[in-house]
Length: 316
Ligand SMILES: [Zn+2]
Image (cartoon, rainbow, N blue to C red):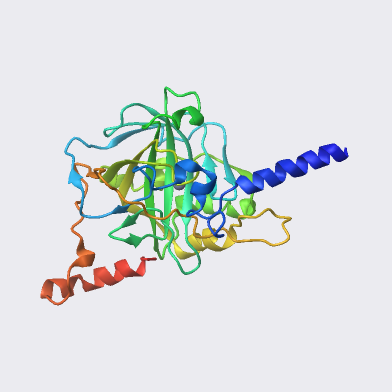
């Protein structure tokens, strides 16, 4: 019994020492490389996230992706989990993505979120160095792989669809299906069931042909360079209160921990694109680099409210 307890203790401490975090110097994103060598940004060139700016090229061959099963109600149930790093929605089988320049069919596995704090934004990717309040990642695995571990050894093993999340006054009814469940997964390790709903209801369905494409990595350890990234230009809109449910009611610690810690700012820092090409889809807007234009002309003054609005969502 004592041996079992001792072994358990060793196992638990080992697990803790290997764990990563976002808020303490010994385990935050800048220290991930110490624990997970493939997270060391100096060794390789294909890390994520990146800043999206005007250094991108249009690729006329990039049309809308085919999202199979996204517009119907899947059978069975889905699961929401707080894994201590994010909130994950595990979806069953039945959905897949293909087309839009992807080299294969990818099965949808899960989606999860990145967010900031009560007064800071927390998207992982930035647009013209501006950070959105949140970012949602829909993770898909190439169908030829038996599991994610195998897919991580393939440079295009995963296809992640990234959606920025911005804030407006009105609640997003479909997003509410997820945010309503958050109180049941406030603490690390907690899970709850959720009734499947058509995932397309959550997405900017009229603007799905506008996106950016580049090759990068997981933004969490082991930071494998195995991801074809598709970042949608038009965000998902939610309300302040829906955002606050993430930034102030989710904890990175277990329920019985002596000290509870809110899970906030769970985003990795921006990485250089180096020689990588970032492509805009056929219908995607090429960014003009407005943030570096001097103010003063009539045109700029007319743009001012837009720029101020943009600054409002900027967490940088
Ligand atoms: Zn993510």
